[in-house]
Length: 214
Image 1: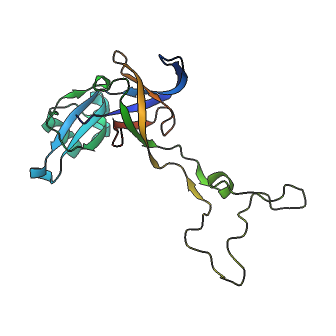
Image 2: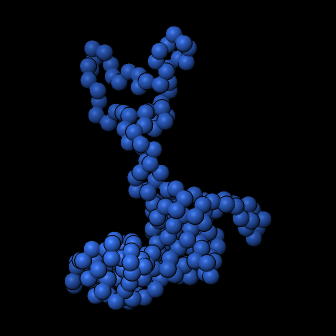
């Protein structure tokens, strides 16, 4: 069955496995989420499940949820939430509107894909962004962390397309594939994943079963 859930990255720690190995793990606060809508081939041309995460209190919902969104939640009989995410599946027969999705649908040993937004670093030079070299650090250099030459002189007398330049670094959608679930704590809605996942602590994450699991 296709599995998916939303969560937040709490941070990283370490854990001993049964074979004695000490591995780095990321702790994810996963769910609970609620199914708000099912899209089918007949009505929408494809199959997907729309889920909500982080239910809003009534006073906050009045300020943060507009009328179309409020009507969407009301039609499904679901309380307004802060986040809505759509997961496209080949088969959605196992899902129903109003169903609650918890971290219990995953188990230790499962392979998952985790999508998040990488940490934004702003407008960044090539030394940090693309690992370029720097100029001499001597006092007389006066050119320490500049870009350097961008092209040939008289030939070809142009900057080739695709040349790395100083620009925005980070704050992009990143997916890490085929991570392994180390442990599930159903009581606290926690998922321990072997390795690192994108984004800063408390960043929003989308977790689903891996497309490349062997």
